[in-house]
Image 1 (cartoon, one colour):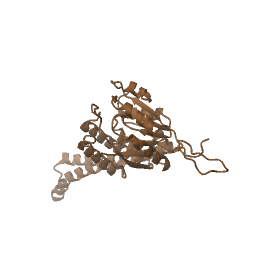
Image 2: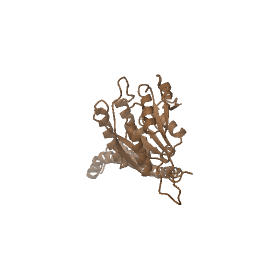
Image 3: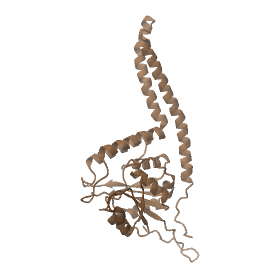
Image 4: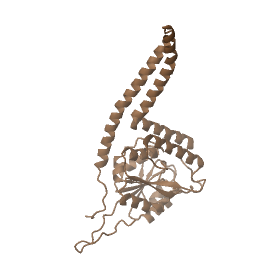
Length: 328
């Protein structure tokens, strides 16, 4: 990326583009085997960028190795990737943020291309979607789970990405300073995606090579545990971001069960004029009332959610966008 390319001359003086301040932020936990090479690769392909390693209570010598490789190291004591992302976004000031996992599986050489796309097209997030032919790098279980979660998220929020769980992303300052991270673990990637979709931010995906971990390096992911946590996060986000749809489903379920149970009672009443199953009739009434309560909650919370999103939008617009104009 040519961050200092000159524009046409005006009045005999070259007007230089403002050089963006790029920060590479790397969440780390026990990545002593890979962190040195990762830092060196970013220093080589993006020499103008500042590399930060945010260590999350590593028990090996990740911190010492990262410092020795030239990175600025910060410590985050609250465990979990979501906690690290929250701290990174709060502490670092930049025009463009490259977030990448510290396991050395992502292609650092793609970083200039991702940053250039973000800045040139005025985007708020560029996701490095993973492409790999190595079975050990991107296991079938993870691929299948990612596809299921991506499809589920698409049903809830409409347009989405092909790889919502990628740990390789580039963000604008506007995105970072308007993102309130709630997740604590690996479900943070889902929340990052939803934030962009919720505010209808300009985003893009770029295919990047995804490799296997080096020998001796162990993944921190658990396919079933973290997959369940991500699924629960999507359901929670569905409830909080689309409350009318969420509570409408509850209303229709209650109404459907109530009507099905009430049909025999109405038939008996029409034939005999009696209501012999009074407890069932009361249960039908209670279920229908419960459904109406669910629907009412959905309507009220939908109005509250729209107001909250509007406030988040104002916060997002309140952060100045980067413009590669004259560097004063």
